[in-house]
Image 1 (cartoon, rainbow, N blue to C red):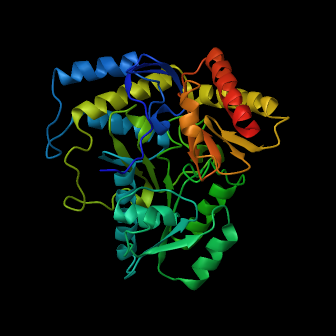
Image 2 (cartoon, rainbow, N blue to C red):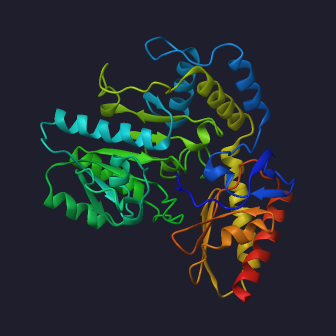
Length: 386
């Protein structure tokens, strides 16, 4: 189906931060498959894990115990500070599980129509429930009637949440991104997540944090909520967890941990041996290479270099980032930049109309940073000067 508006290039192979197309042209991937290939392309540890597991056992069923799944659950809970995990295949499915957890929780509290607070500018997926939770009319348009049960407030606005609570006694949870990714790398004020945690504790709500794009070391911590020293009740993760192998997870702790019982929820493929072996290789590599710290250091270096390069370019503003979630704005719409970047041998993304978003692999070297900055600044300065 014509759902993507694909750019005129077909990639044939990849290695690290590089991709080669079918004509053997070479490209720097500053998007990592939209925050997926955080270890770069064809990472040796992931490749070896897939080869080994494919020769043993690819899939069984969740009717039976899966050793790699149990190991992966332990690892994720260790890094996230959570208690239980449900495995699925994507970020949208992980967020669906979170939404179902909130509704189960609400019904246990004798609330007939549980509501979840969500934020403007958010993105939580494209299933009917997750697009209804998403704060974008563009994503929702044409798919009405939307799923009910969501209360929308501005992002980074604690007073709006308190106001919503005063006018709705059926709210049971907040679902929020710690940094709005598709919305343009919108970073909230320091203390925002901590304030949300306090509100949820005071009102008996679940705090559910969508770490689909921010999780797995990208923000400079294993999970972005760790920047504020809090624990959510529910956390969702996907994208970088499998480095390209489809896998997602919904993690829960405390009062949310034991809401699901046999028959409440399931996934045919979720957490199968192949996907879990890939994810274990990802986590092992992130641990051994301390990619949380590396992402933090590289992000600061990249921000400093971009700020220096664009200091005399008035069309560029609001250079910002957290770890290797990097963005800046141009002074007008620039969606055609993605195709123009191909001519420079560069893969970038334009989101929210005029925001350049960078989500490079976490394995960058200092030399890679220099290459990225050189190609990007050349592209942007030519573009704004034309």
